[in-house]
Length: 262
Length: 222
Ligand SMILES: Nc1ncnc2c1ncn2[C@@H]1O[C@H](COP(=O)(O)OP(=O)(O)OP(=O)(O)O)[C@@H](O)[C@H]1O
Ligand SMILES: [Mg+2]
Image (cartoon, rainbow over the protein chains, first blue to last red):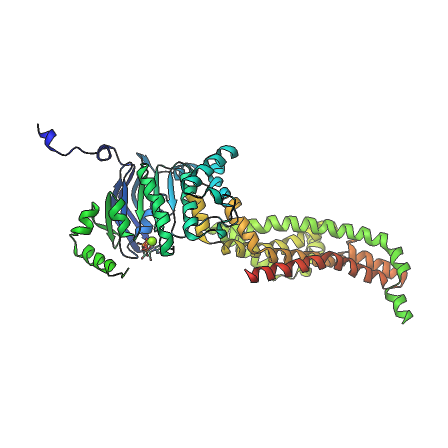
């Protein structure tokens, strides 16, 4: 039987996409920054986005939770239209889309615990007690339960970023977006954040990650997407993207990165 | 020398004038409470309006702020108290003073709030919105607490200015602290009540002024 010969596809391949970006376009004024981006992330998949500075990676991520308003195209989360939501519905939708920023953006006037509790109480309407339990749980998950009472300014960059991850995870998102989560960190602190992300992936979290950590992409990514000039130029499994790049643009990008030019 | 003490630091006269000054002080404090309360609320709303991307909100707010920051408060006061009656609007001195100083003061508070809100990095509000907080929740729990902390010395300075400003109310015969002291002076033919009033102002404002300096030094250190 022919079916027996074909490699057994993993569950991931069959499931419908958790996050689906269709024909996404974005212009700032007259400048077109994204052109007809198609990209989908299946449940439990880690999709890694690389590309030169200014290629539109952040803009694409920010369109996924509508921090940036798409000019055209649609975004679907688990089959639901993110792009059709307005007002309260959009706020509710954002609860399901965790986002981690390059600059952490912890609330400096609130303790670590309060940072992780705020949206749980105000947006998810959890009771304070439940929110606290969940917050401590998530802080334990990222190895920072002992810092619950600290202020963000008392933490290292790596610790702050892990708190930011806990803050997003506490809302039980369906997908996590990471925008260069380690770019602002001292080299010796990068590992602690990547470790948390690897652990998340093993637990089956769906992740879309923009990063320059190529080593991490090789190890952890299911698929790598190369963007340049607001379009997806090439995408595939990490072995192919890194081992056998097809387009000249990707080839030159990779050689620049490997020479430490990025 | 004795004459001098007698004219300016006459304790008997101060004691005599004290009940009247106390009444004046109460009016001053009421005035401050109302003007500062309304000014803070009005200032915040104006600042939010001025920062709004919606033009029909932004331009009226900006216009209001500019206009009432430029107009001298005394001109405003005289206009509201003596000018508006010609239009059939006869206001009590207290109400006239509240309106005039509210217009002036909310414009000043608006500038302070606007600077405060702009001092909070954009990423803060984005992080909050990304976790599903609504715009008002983001403002209340993330942006405003940081904004207020960043401009606390300016908010306090403005409060000091309001207390000083209320002494202008004496020109429309509102019996606040200065007016009462001046009354006492004209009855006793002695300047001691004025000195007493000055001491009361000092007692209220000096701690505030010290507090502001401390904050400003604190901010400079950080
Ligand atoms: N708010 C904005 N207004 C105007 N132009 C913008 C805005 N945000 C981004 N851009 C432009 O859009 C393009 C893509 O920016 P984006 O930040 O998405 O790139 P990126 O791939 O994330 O780059 P980097 O690796 O430097 O983070 C850039 O040319 C940038 O100047
Ligand atoms: Mg970027």
